[in-house]
Length: 177
Figure (cartoon, rainbow, N blue to C red):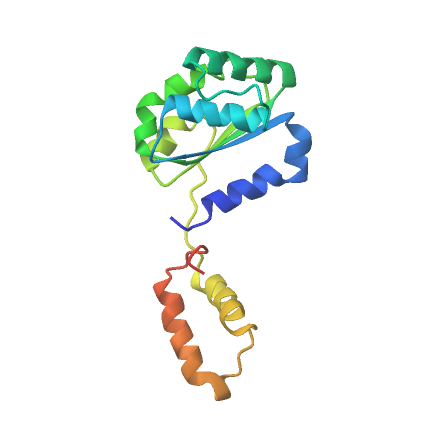
């Protein structure tokens, strides 16, 4: 956690070329409380926006039909499933039924901390993210902690040493930074 998976997905999702390429974009925060129906409801809500015809009481079949109608009418789509956990692996195929009418060029981007999930859902490639290396992390920490990356050592030696100890405890995680 904290390595930047969601942030990277947000950058991709909001990039101008991505917006131009995909007619529809949907973002679903899945979390540990995965349920096929809830995930599909959130996908439909994301695709349709605040459309008043959307009803959380709809049956699973109605939700699937609505998703398929939106996808077929609107064209290729990008679906981001953010923070997918192991619990979803067993129900992955059920979720994919809803988007079985997938259009060429459509993409499902999944963020996860689980190698099992990545292996289960991957069809193209996995992009494992690692903590930042010290030589990248330390200057950014200095900037946020001291307002500059050029801290004068003579006047701030103690402060600099304390900052360095704190930075090392953060383990190179951008979110902790």
